[in-house]
Length: 357
Image 1 (cartoon, rainbow, N blue to C red):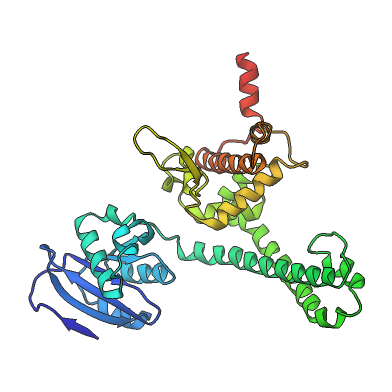
Image 2: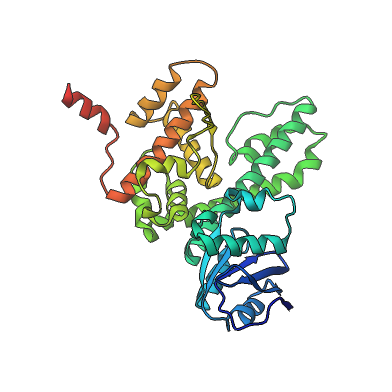
């Protein structure tokens, strides 16, 4: 379905598509920014290929989202150059009070015609990398669901007057099943069966993930760091994908939203909370590794000493600040090891200071 706004032989300078689950709106502009055509197309591979395949190669702007990865690959296979916009950083789009699909498509086309950097473009990972990352994220969803079930069983047991023993999630059914109050045991029987099944499936995922570093050698470099297992290393590599995507290692903390935001005004320079931009899944894994590193089982290393030094300052949320600081430095260190291929030295900075002294 399409509606011609201006019939002419004018060459298309830019094209914007606002992707949606069923129908996507699109608009084309000429060099002067005049609308050539508007239209709607079903968001399916055959319809998109039929609509945009015959077009002469042009630059196409789309928003990042559920469909942007496969649509961008499809459009590139048709010969077009595709710019995937991070719309959350484009105030013209996400703060527009007259927001609708047609207007968004036109905004995308106009912005990419003027300067594609205005769209804060992102690069999608490869199809193979996306498939492998899906395994990691599926495991994460399953772990979260199992945790909710365990917490539910603990909660209703406590309400019945029984506090279940502390144990690992994997051992929950075996250790806590016999201790359940008699009155609720029949009600949670199915839940315990689901928890057991989930644990089995999570172990299957773990075995698959443990083999992935053979496929991604960069992950092996990152696993030199105690506290960074196959899951964290592979997730880091698959999310960044190209080590040169981060301009310098010091920027890795900002890439995963682990640096304080700022709201400078005049002479006031107040640091804010961490930005929490970038991939939240990897950020969560880095924070979990930070907890381990400064925890009681963490090895002596520069990262641990750095974190414990911050925690020792005391004050409100000192432990949380220390964990985030370690996670930030860990993200930087992982990028540096990946970039240089160096052997990890846990006390590299400490040894340098001793030599200097």
